[in-house]
Amino acid sequence: MKMHVLITGKPRTGKTTLIKKVIEACGPACGGFYTEEIIRKGQRVGFLIRTTEGREAILAEKGLSSPFRLGKYGINCQNLDKIGVAAVEKALRNKEIIIVDEIGKMELFSPGFKDVVMRALDSGKRVAGVIHQAEWAFLEAIRKRPDVQILEVDGLNNSLVWEKIKSIFGLQE
Image (cartoon, rainbow, N blue to C red; front, side, top):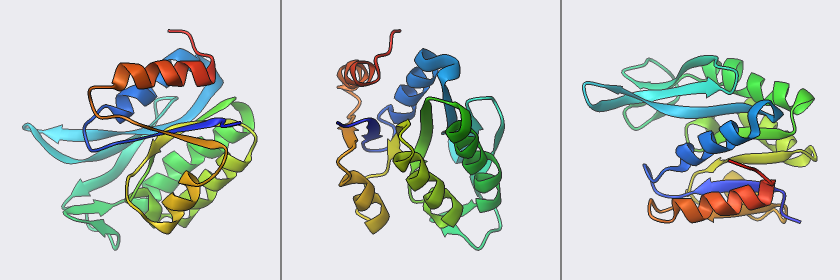
């Protein structure tokens, strides 16, 4: 039985919007984190990590000094571990559904993140999240798991994907 749902798709097709709907529908039964763009003067300048409990920190930002870089963004792995990884670890202890948005290129700089993702998938609890489309070994291993269902959004099929997610997790709006 596929118990985990991971959403994939091109940038800005509504993946995180769907994860926020899962969080809203699950209420206190879920825990973890999601990412949001930081927009200044109409331009994306970085990404925030925000927990389901409202804690937040910068994940990546243009001009951020860091040994970890992706394009023009410096990655703050310390914030990822302190906020994102900690939120997933806490959810593993006392929540039914684990939220992980996103299992992506920036997050994979953190060994602690990769470890907690695998522990969440192996925990017997349900995981809802977003997975990047890159064909990297870690991501491919997750996609090939028999307990993971990948749902692709394209910006046009989001309501259909939402109906599938609700059905899989038994959610009400």
